[in-house]
Image (cartoon, rainbow, N blue to C red):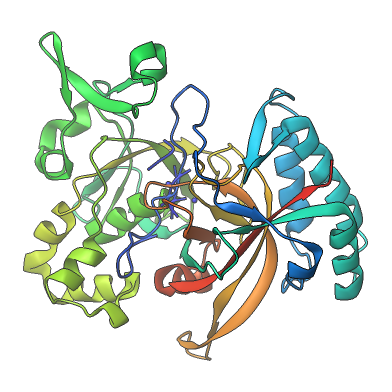
Length: 412
């Protein structure tokens, strides 16, 4: 939604929504999709290695398959809508959308029986190719972080308490799609605005936040009372704004100002404000609460700014499919196939009676690669969508653990 993020998300552009913050060297979420209007580029260097039968991990699912059928159904619906000949890279191999659709349906049919671990492993070994993230024969750990769907108090109108707008897409924001310009096809989508007869970069965070008249060209979807919560809503890429009357609206990443994302977590570490070992989303909140005079400078260190749209359903990943908590991951789509069935092994938090993290426990489960994000780059970064609520916030805010990533596809 970490960004999604955030991240369809950077961006979805999302989640995004998206939502990952650098916990030490990486930003929190920013999950969401980058919409270029053209084909997704595939890395020339394969980062998925096909495994022999004696190299397979032991497959299991700590959620006892809960939510897996739902997310498979959503990805199957997506695959049924795209051209069947579209190809997806699994390392050095290529499979078209029709084969991925067949692969998902076959897996779903088997999972409906809720197989025991031994039966599950026999089925995969007999019917599926398995690819491990990394290169060569040695271990290739992946850094797992998390994103979630935040819930923040707000108001549909500006008040003395609720003074910070959740902005929609500005009317003067331009998105330049390089795929319409043959010589520029390998360059990234650009965001800007017109100045006379020239396109110039769009305003950065500092300019947007300090321009009281900005709401004239970017209609507020809601107003919130905490600029830090609004910042993290942008990082995550999606969330819910809760109104005093008990109603709420759900907002989703629409686009960004095109400025590069810079992690305030890394900034606070580099300036000695928070140690790397203590870094988390919660630690950033606490620091800014204790040092309000520094808040603007810290938030402005990140020039990127996210604009939202209101949505009735969500959070959505970059494939425009709803994300199921614990079953969706965000990855770099130029490295890994999307959508695709994946299997992950890493750590999750266990909370005590007071809601604090007591320890980190190993877990393994099946997930669907449904999202992406600007902070999620390269073959060693994966973001897990944890959903909403206190546990999701704790997991997303503190998670920064190595693990293993595998992709599965039906044997042709």
